[in-house]
Image 1 (cartoon, rainbow over the protein chains, first blue to last red):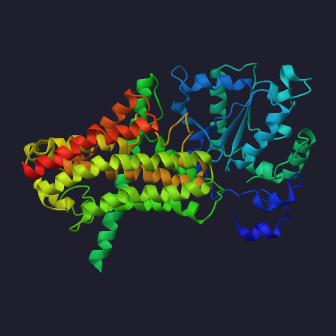
Image 2 (cartoon, each protein chain N blue to C red; image 1 turned 90 degrees about the vertical axis):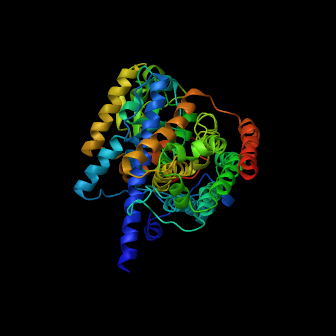
Image 3 (cartoon, rainbow over the protein chains, first blue to last red; image 1 turned 30 degrees about the vertical axis):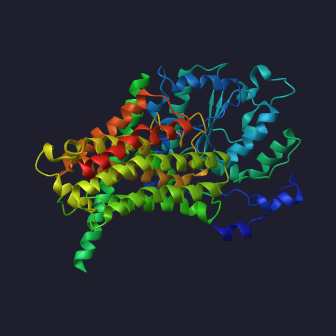
Length: 210
Length: 304
């Protein structure tokens, strides 16, 4: 990230933070990135598609469907998928089912800590329209109001086969260069933040955590 | 001047070949472990794809100067170790550099990278990094002892500190290998190699499911790309060192590939068969039987 750009861009107020904490966190907005040359980007997209690191964070009950993927029966490593224990190294965030208000806060932090290009998979019907939690007081209904979702996998619960199909579709889209959640998030940052803050009432974290 | 440039080009070729072979070995190891699990596992070139992907990340953040220098030190450790080991004995391209005391330098470089990495990972501020570093340094101290004893035994045996001379002394058939002439030192060194390679049961530093991935928890993007590249290079450097010191070195590329592969497979098969030690178990293991065997190896060579 170029320091000059940060200075010229409007700084984030980081409202929820205590005064002594403000200096500890990032106050720069996320930036959108232009793709490199046509063939370079094509090559890099091929590498990205074949090495997808999943953030191993069970965000909802759908996370139970990720476990069989790692073991002998479905073996997702064959497709270059691997779980990663830290958001810093992961490239794919799998939102496993319903998204409770409490988890949303952590998900936003984790998503912003992931380094781009990053992708989001919404797993299960609850991420599309709330599913069976549609009128719950405690969950959100549409995930793509809060994070840029690249692939939805429907079902309650989707079987691991459906997940594999979803991952393969994601790989196809990455190879074609059609999805770029990181830029989408950066370009519509204010809209996403406003939506997130409508849900998360106790916003005691920075507006953007890298 | 021309000679220097040619030497630099040769070193570069040697480094690239070693890195790619080291990464492929890592891929083969993943494949073997996957078969032991009853899976198919990722393709063998997966580590190379991961490195391309990590280096192609658009953003990266730094936690400070030492954090930035950690992977650089690690890479310098890997390159330093590799460049003073004759990758292929007698080859001008893969012969690398050699001078009178390079065995000591290589031993120093093996640990230099880990110390740099410890400082870098410490600055990232993640608790798992600190735990991983503490475990790594204590295990390193433990396996260094039998390894150093084995090297002392070797130095007394051959009367030199030059790796190329030690390889030269082992030429002319399997009966001249250290494996036959000094079996005790070889066994001790092979045990400490298991600790160095950090597969199970000595995988206490990057302990998956325990302290998720230890020191590199906060490392990402091109920092992680550098660390992964070094993992391939450093791996092959250690194997080449052991091949040279104990198994007669290699006089051509196919012998090198065969010997490093077999040496690595010892680690991989032990790793696929055993669960992980706890930290104190691992340290006690190295300070027990291997150290006593190491002392015996020195005594036998020096006085018998």
